[in-house]
Amino acid sequence: MRASGLLLGRCGMAKVWVTGFQPFGKHTENISGDIARSLIGQSFDVEIESSLPFDVTEKMIEIQYGGEVLSVDEKGSVRTSEILRDELPDAIIHLGLKEDSVKINLELCAINECDFRIKDNAGRQLKNTPVIESALPLLHTTSHAPTLRQIAAKYADVEISEDCGKFVCNETYFRTLNSIERDVLLIDGRPIPALFIHLPHPEQISIVRQKEVINELSVYLVQKPTVQVVGAIAISDDNRILACRRSPTEVMGGLWEFPGGKVEFGETEQSALKRELKEELELNVEIGKCLARESHDYGSMIVNLAFYECKVNAAGINLSVHDSYRWLDEDESGDLEWLPADVGVVGQLAEKGFGNLG
Image 1 (cartoon, one colour):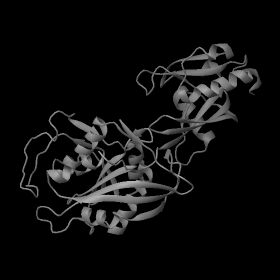
Image 2: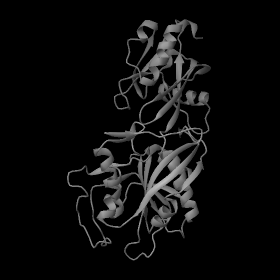
Image 3: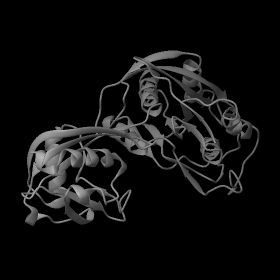
Image 4: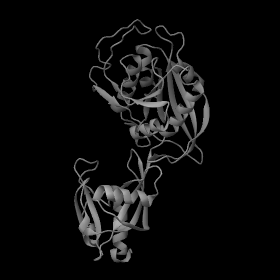
């Protein structure tokens, strides 16, 4: 396992390894190589707007691009994996040409198969051949996929793709993702974010616009995503608090939590909590004051939580995403296995006394 970390100050700095390809087949130019060449060795101060539900801590970062324009053959496909033996960037962006596309494609996965419809620039034309014989059949991007989907939903000229093809683009992407997984290459406690972006011809989307999207994506890739979450501290008439257990099919199933969820775009914390409690428990609630705020680093993302006092009708609870609930006094609250992000708040509230929260 090799690990490094991102150095962020008031205006953070991050290093992104970007690659593009030389022309291939019938093409005398390749936009991916042209854009990569224009970025490599350059620094850009990139500022983005806040967005929900998935955001980042730093809105302005100096992106320093390193990288290479790769040959369209096996040598080019292994080049980034070789670089990772000696240097760990904060993120990796592979660029490639998708000649029939009218949008910028964010590739969510690579498959362990080469099936070339034309020869590569070294004369190979592989058919139904694994990229790496002993590797998994499919690897997902190490970037945060929900953030990528959020960005694609934001722009009409960006879309999500789950088909990177079976040519050298896919071969390169698969080799990079395999190296990150096999060698446990970590940055700031998470796998190095790697993303393949297929670009259309500049007649479809200008080079200026395509570089804007790449710069914005870089700001998201080099940081852990943050998500704003609200939780309900529901207090009964006899001074007990409500705890709900996550269903086995949910992430972190079996752990207990204060009910609530993510704040979506356009919502206040209070309106989000009302919506979540209606969806999860079929409850209409009155939202009181904020009793606590907490931030927890889960490794892959940072969760910022706000906990609000709520008045609820205990008889009206109907579970949808949880499999159990309990009303707890101070002593009982310490007996449950809580979500890591909720543990500290439970302790603080119990120490103060549930009867003193209102």
